[in-house]
Image (cartoon, one colour):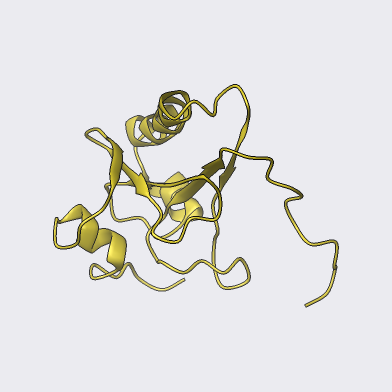
Length: 124
């Protein structure tokens, strides 16, 4: 991936230039409802630092930032009452995974049975 784009949509949300339906926020993490939900619960969880991908986040984020992201996901799952019924935690990285926004983020899906993770197709 290329350099971090400070004008990507999530960076603009973090700066308050664009609105979001906030679900959770602390010193290191912001979480908000996806504007095109794919499940009854579809929350985007983003670090406040300028990280492009999970690879970038894992390499450069502090231990505090990494722990904060995972603790936020668990807190949000409990808050939205999907911790018992189950949820999916997904991060896309790069072109082949269809990462659309070049700011590391995870999707938290829940609120219904989610089906298989990937298509059974092995080519494409």
